Length: 211
Image (cartoon, rainbow, N blue to C red):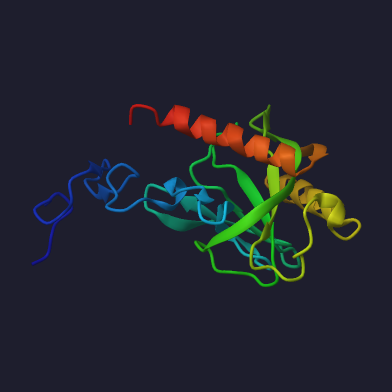
């Protein structure tokens, strides 16, 4: 039996868009959406990171909690790729209104939507200019628990020379392509990175209080 867009007999209850099509939201999903799963692996005390864009990819993906899927955000110019896997910590909220960003170091790229356990080793405290306004948009840096190449890295100074500088340059160039400004304010260690993460957790809890 075919269902029309306004026939909700076999459709789950929830929000519908202006055309009458069912629209799943984080509140109506039958499972916990990726952006709201537990941010820590309690057994290991590792941070959970949801990968959006894998290392070596020209295509930038962004997670959409309303459909619980990865959405194509943009395609980088030929010859430009993401240098490392990029994603976010679930159940967090940055000052820009999105989950807290994380760039994760590991030996091989993983697929978008993969959840990776990792430890924070630092952060790039930064600002991003969008629509004429500068907003804090920090990038946490982490090492995957399963990483071998970076197994001994505990802070940014343990990484090879110029790696952090290259990361800053990538985000500057990436944002310039999207007509946005980006400026790195400072490099931070693991303790500051954990503090920035805690702030993101508090913002998320505050925004979801009463929901």
